[in-house]
Length: 159
Image (cartoon, rainbow, N blue to C red; front, side):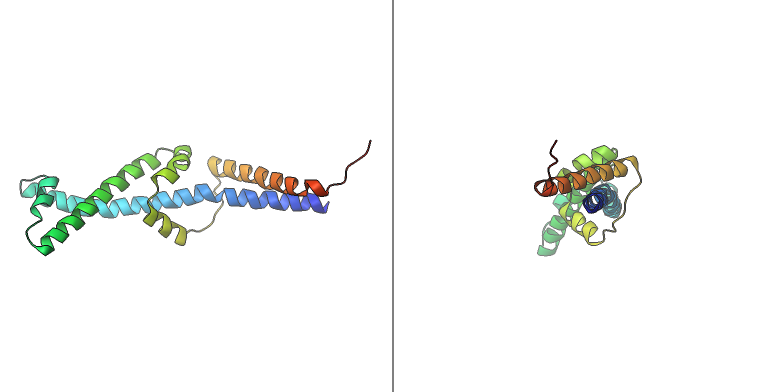
């Protein structure tokens, strides 16, 4: 009875633990969307100023040269716009659906946003089909791990 209760506890621990991945992914995509929205404002202002001057984004960046300040500002703006383009592309891919997001998240993760997401992460058990699927997988993994660990200590029944 005690072994079965411990196995159930391990299964539940696995379920809750595994269910955190879809929740983290959701919180990451929300933060990513916020970063893209913020950078979009900067890109829109810069592109608007370039358009008003009759030049492209690349030409406007090239014109930000001539003094130490302008050189640095040009490099900073180019870096900001490149980050915006990269994060916008990541967001488009990660918004493609839950299963796709979970599969691609590790390969499309921005380390800065991932670190801030982890720092503010609030554990939760999502009740979406994906969250429940991960919870079920975690339950089986936890139960199975406990069963494997206790296998050498079980009494054998003789027939």
